[in-house]
Length: 157
Image (cartoon, rainbow, N blue to C red; front, side, top):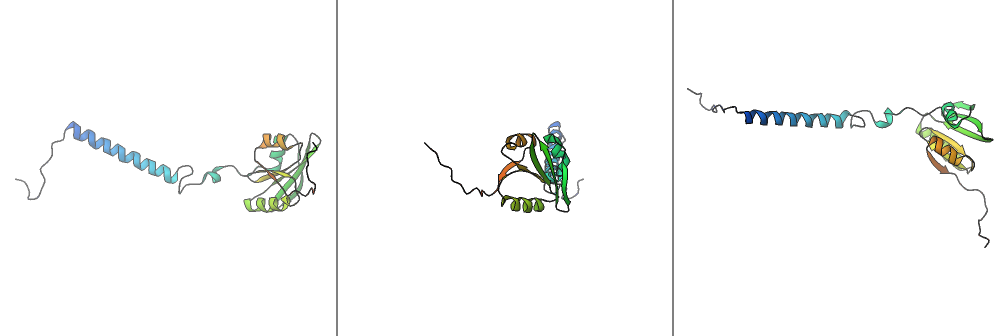
């Protein structure tokens, strides 16, 4: 005799078992996807991709990629700066511990004109002779300062 209110037992067929396994796998895949979204690389609660990148390059490493040896000219809390010579050109390299320090230095330097190669945590001062070469070697973005030339270009016909 069956208890009052109890459901009758359903026969377990291969189809029922297969459907249950498929649903269990689907739920497992869904949970794994959510986990990856939350804590995977660049996930919502995991470390950001920026935090996983190596820190800013050193003055010496940048100079080495250029093919010269840097002489350090400043080593203070917000800036490490060096100068080296390549192909007869002086190349000024600066590295920064924070984005704020880099932006402050770059903003002030732009007031003096010139062109700058700006990377993640570093800046290289460019000349017309070094612009293409250094951009090809180091990457970064070329940024121009204020033009103080005071001359007007005209086409002479």
